[in-house]
Image (cartoon, rainbow, N blue to C red; front, side):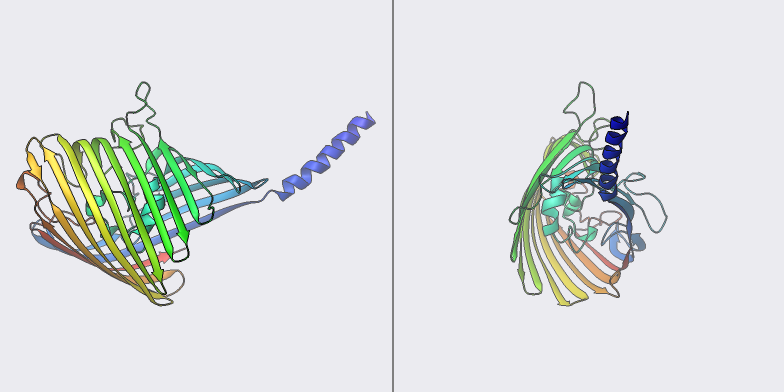
Length: 381
């Protein structure tokens, strides 16, 4: 009996220090972006509007880790998006529509998470664009066709993100359809990689979605997607080069939608489109002229190709964006933005692909040109 008690006491003493060593942390964080927009033409009328979440989406969230020992941690993140002006939930009125995941992180093998998450285009390629880095929503490529501004997230997803090895990191995601007998119906997958070395950052990514919104429990819900198509593919690559206080960037992305039946932005197609394609070419630059201030500029050219029984259309979008930002403190900044879009080569049979429509505007212009100017304030906590 004494031997049993001694053994039990010995085991107990061994367990107590191990429990004491385990550490966990939970962080509450958030960001509020608010501003005033002027649009020169929305369906033939100018508009002055209060708009939230343009430089960055307004949000609050909690994230945390628990040290499991041996270089392994449990990780989680829950992130809510909202509209400052109305207080309404964002992302289809989801409680945690921006992100919601749990997983394990290893100092040796990387991180594996499960839940509602960003795809590899957002994780790896978007940070090299203007809209996915310093400029935000207003400077997205037309209709955010390549999702570099994370217009949507993927449900039921399992994601792996590597550690960084000599400047190289990579990852991938798979989103389940969750449909019995329909494994590929509304599923998604993506891959990406990034290399950062000295003054150079290079990234590439690929994403494919099959039958977006085809079932309510799939990887991409109908109230979350930009386009409805039998297959949506996005791939691209980019480079950023830093010269002192200046960062120069170039990004190319290609989006193909086969058997497209409609779009949140473009509207329902009169006839099923055999294909809808976008080729985006972006040049961007950011100059940090003071510790607490920068200016940025971008030019984007997008070549579209819409093919359906109603005819072909080859619209060409030219976009120029400018931004200036000044930090009042480490957590609060004010900024001004301007965006100009010109559409050429549109076809009336593919309206509104025949008029300008800046991502972030309430509606298309009644002409081939549209301008939006914004003054905003952003606070982080």
